Amino acid sequence: MAAKKTGKRAGGLGKDGGDAIEMLTDDHRRVDELFEEYESSKDEAEDEAKQALVARICLELTVHATVEEQVFYPAAREAIDPERSDMLDEAEVEHASVKDLIEQLSGMSPSDVLYDAKVKVLGEYVKHHVEEEEGEIFPAMRDSEIDLEALGSEIETRKEELREELEAEFAL
Image 1 (cartoon, rainbow, N blue to C red):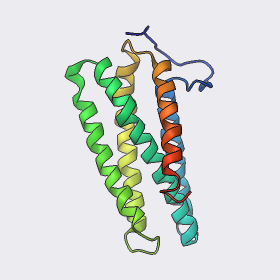
Image 2 (image 1 turned 30 degrees about the vertical axis):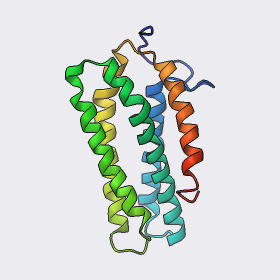
Image 3 (image 1 turned 180 degrees about the vertical axis):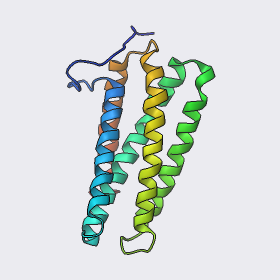
């Protein structure tokens, strides 16, 4: 296994991706800001603007969840104590709920009755998931022997691939 990496990495993200946990945390903050933007403008925004913002939220969440499922969680399962794998199982179940709401929203229009409610519930699911991830999974990974820089590089590469694949799907 690679050398132990703990604590904050000076300089944030570099050209090679950066610390995996910092990258994923940055994703969390970006999506939180998008949800806040939606909530603060939903009553005044035109349907087209609302739909574009929700498409951005859904793209960001889909890319993030996919890299976690394909890269981060498998690495976490190897790096942390197997007795704590239940937190990873729960995270993957939470991802399934988020994906279900994303799919529902993709088939809706902002003028549909439950559109705003589904966006709000999606935001609440994500907030809960982020709290657990940042409070349990990320600290366990920081305490492990995994090379978070190398993992970050792998995550960044996969994120770029996914973004290219998915932007057309989300009409961005």
